[in-house]
Length: 525
Ligand code: FB9
Image 1: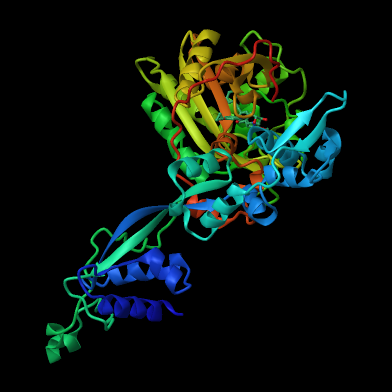
Image 2: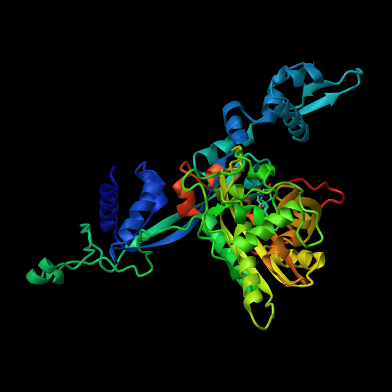
């Protein structure tokens, strides 16, 4: 029966009812017409949406139905009756045999106890062996009778004690059913005229709108979500990080140049020209334009000097022959620290060219793509987004670096971080940072940091007492952890499921309660 026909039948039944009780209960209506109650509820709801055709209010009705065990008893008789009837009419049986003769040991155990308490049987141990005998020549399986009543929907015939006893024995259970009492509405009629949902020109022209019924405007209805753009989770997390840096008074560096010269990507950062990070299998070199024309000459010579001999910053350098050709090679930047080097050099220039020789402290950040020709795996692609913070000021110390990174990660909800010494060609001392991740149940490496080397800062022309601290992390890792994504290919790349982008929740890097970390747990990257 279609919903339309079902609604029609309901209206006709309602129409036929004579007062005083002009009411149809959806559950009774479903049972009487062998209909699925949910379909009846559906019809009631759609009739309700047609205005004052009907009035329906939800009611709760309780009824009892048999549990599985109750069903078995109706089938096979109550446990106690089965025990009684297993005992030979005029004899006795060994208790253990009796128990064994009833397949379900649970039934045997419960039945025996109940038959004993009903004084239907007796247990005689006088012969040393427990013998069971009938104590009643015939018994009435009351329970079975009651359960049959419940099964036939006549649970009301049982008195409270009987019902509670069956409930206590988990043979029946009470079902609370929601149904609808349907009454004729103030605008009741048996013809379902689909109300108009729109007033159109023709109705106005012909005046037919006067006789039409119009569907109520449901001002709470959510409009159709307009097709709109969706921010990729990475961009949402990126925006959160940007806000954190801006809150901390950092300025954003311009990072809109993926191509860098080896000069800014490596040499200014005191990364020796033979450093493995500069190998082809780690860095993408450009074939066209292969070479960078504009390298600031004087500065370049100072960089050459610091690589070859340490220049004038109390270093011995790397004692190798530094090649200009190498420094001019264009690469896809492997880190945004290249941009930091540019910015620091620019600040040094401003300082050098400023009459006042006043150096204004610097707080800069960058979040953008960097490229590494790495072996691809579940967490590594040939590119990632690096987040970097740099602070240049007088007499900055390792303590400032630890304090700054602590403050930064606090805003991410990461409270106590651990520092582990590490090595970077451009910072000394350098530290990896770890935080205990309760979800993963382990220490997670959350970034890298250090104090930039004088071999990097001095050739730029920064004042002697200016120190520069820096730290970095990736954008992908926190985003994967935040959105519970374990494989980087589900986050970025042509294979991702766009639903993940359309449906991902807003990103709030809210501070979360840091769980106690187990003492002595080892730091793992
Ligand atoms: O992001 C990383 N881990 C991380 C960060 C946040 C996070 O958030 C969770 C919500 C709590 C979870 C994890 N890492 C840095 C650590 C590791 O994943 C590491 O294996 C991979 N690293 C990348 C480089 O891989 C070759 C992450 C990337 C990285 C590493 C170093 C820097 C930047 C990014 C740096 C730097 C630096 C150092 C000194 C001065 C200036 C910049």
